[in-house]
Amino acid sequence: MTADLSIGQVAERTGLSVHALRFYEREGILAEPVRREANGRRVYSEDDVDWLDMCIKFRSSGMPLDTIRKYTELIRQGPGNELERLELLRSHQQHVAEQIEELKECLRVITYKVDIYTEHVNRGTADTLWVGPSATNNCEETA
Image (cartoon, rainbow, N blue to C red):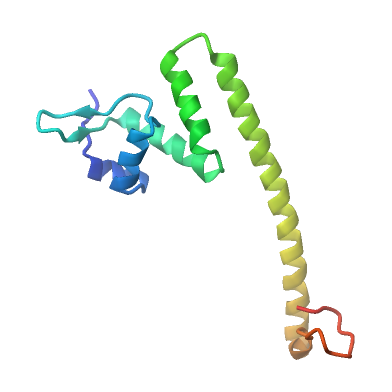
């Protein structure tokens, strides 16, 4: 038997605010409806926390809420739509892979700039790194 968790405990465990948890519930992002105690308080399970952790990873990787909602709906429907779920996940996987490649290129540019600045700082020539548009001398780099 899994322990019942309050909304505050789930917020602490997931890093989501109580408001975000309520929003996810309203938006149909949770795999199962949140149980309620007799007094109306939400009661979560470990499975809910695991699901939320996965959804947080989806969101952090740029998956739109509509896509998470669609995935959730497919899960709720049960067996028979696994190919649709797979396609949804593959599509997002491709999107994330493209993001990673773009970030690698950004990192290459930043590393190049760090190397230039490091070299100039070590040589004592860092004051030549920024040359405004009206400057007449040609430095190795501008900004």
